[in-house]
Length: 351
Image 1 (tube, one colour):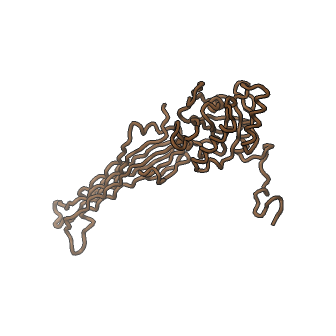
Image 2 (spheres, helix red, strand yellow):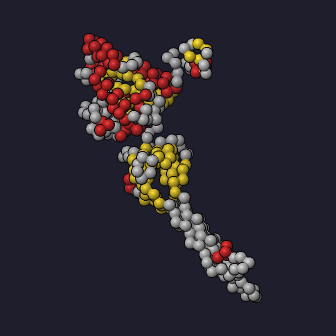
């Protein structure tokens, strides 16, 4: 299945059915009267987040959706049937934008969320509705109201607990393949990963989802390389694992480049908790390793981990660090003290 995270769709709700102009004509009934029924309501257009989907590929092959028109009213006070609704099924994490691709209509972040995008038109009144004491035989009926039509953009942002960021060939896909059952493409050339990937990692009886996105390069926010559009897939994560390859000549510069792109993208990515790790340390001598760890530590705010997918060095520690950030645990794996977040508790002193 191909990965598609953005699609443009045209939708139109159903028109309302027309009311009927009809009069009773029955044997042995001296005076008839109007008996035209009302038209049925047009179908609505809904969008719903469902389980089992992780791409918008279905909307590559069908972009037009129209709900059914309501049934027309008939004689003998028979009302028209309501038009059938149409439901667009999308993965959890899908956002719906207006035609300008900027105005957010709804955000379906959990499975089961449902939103009405376009309401069907009301059915028209039949002539029985217009009967009054002074107008016993009305010969008018309303047409049904037209449905709503609009063009929308569907934009998918994967639901994950942790996200992997870094330059191309930083070892993100290798890390994902090592700690989960995901099988991303791995090769020794830049931009091996062209689409985001997900994997479920397990550590200490706790499972969480990790998202891998294509690498960033300098100027990605201006469209250089693949650009920064895929950063949307790590917007919902609780923590970022920033991998810097030990094969880079300037590991500090590589780290700063990615941090600049995160800041330029905005949407709060630069403020997310971050775990920094030097990957592929098995390729270094002891002296070079110590030198690059120190250089990376000088620009990173927190501690720097050393990772190797070959020897599995640091993998368990990295997973536990991610778990702590996701679960909000302290460094020893316990929950925070309740009074730590109490009102008036600052710096260990009560006001």
